[in-house]
Image 1 (cartoon, one colour):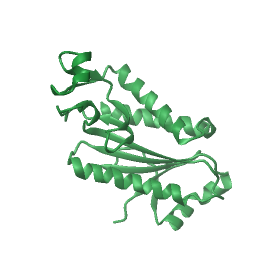
Image 2 (cartoon, one colour):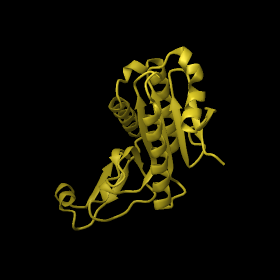
Image 3 (tube, helix red, strand yellow):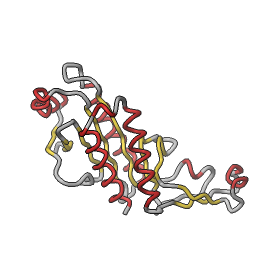
Length: 209
């Protein structure tokens, strides 16, 4: 259910972006909209996680003597040390420790990058950041050793002419040494996936074999 909610919400989000990229003028617009829609999607399904903290966590004891909190699994800039743009808490691997609600394991993490300018301006720094996001997700996956974890890195390109878009895949591959393929039918193809979204296209990043 978790993965279906995330995938359905992301696909709706991509469709929303492609219908009018200028509704999103910054990275913060992307992150805020996606966070709110994912939060609402989990709320509609009445999906929550219950986190029990230790006796040391006085803030929770004041709020709730049982030391338990029930929250929506959708988080932003979470967990504390990784700070993923969007994270979905893993309800199957909850830990009990001081301030446990800040440091739970994550089932799905989403990293976002945004390129506002046309292709005449240098997109390479954004692509570099996109690749760093993929590596960040890989590092986290290796760290927690959880087969249920999935990470998605996404680069949204707002403003590109139709003429330039025809050459986009070639430009990205040649200038940044990427291997890209046209998006097929699911976002969760691998443990870690990367996608580049423009007004008219979705490209999927492929690891070099």
